[in-house]
Length: 181
Image (spheres, rainbow, N blue to C red):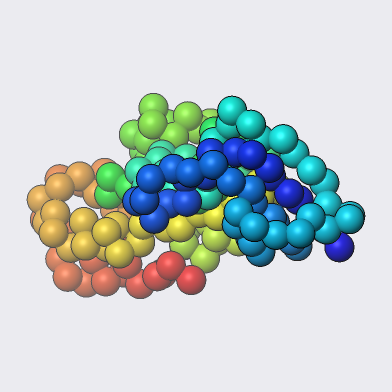
């Protein structure tokens, strides 16, 4: 059995309550007990005195759309276990047949190269499943779709490239039809 006992740490449990000193038992990847438990004989024991023990943090506004595809551990080392991507009304999908305009616009934020851009959300999600990172991420798809629908004169990317002209409802439907999965 895979057990980890974190002993003597300051527990911040995410409920909004005050921090407290205690122990935490993780068994098979799940929190099984907090503060009082019998240490399993096979548990890996960690002395957490002087350390904070907390659940994973959610980065609710990241621009890690491309970094979640790489074996980079910076966020995990900071305690981030969940990322929300697709913020600010653009994402690595849907990209047109010539995605260079999207790359030129977004590479300053995404820190991307010249070989990214997926035609549909499902293609992007398939690529994320191949990633070796052990944390969760979520697409900010609802806000992305609302952003498109609420910016008839905004700068949008897609099969028409960069445009500041109003999009017809048929263009918006085509743009959003791919859905998240």
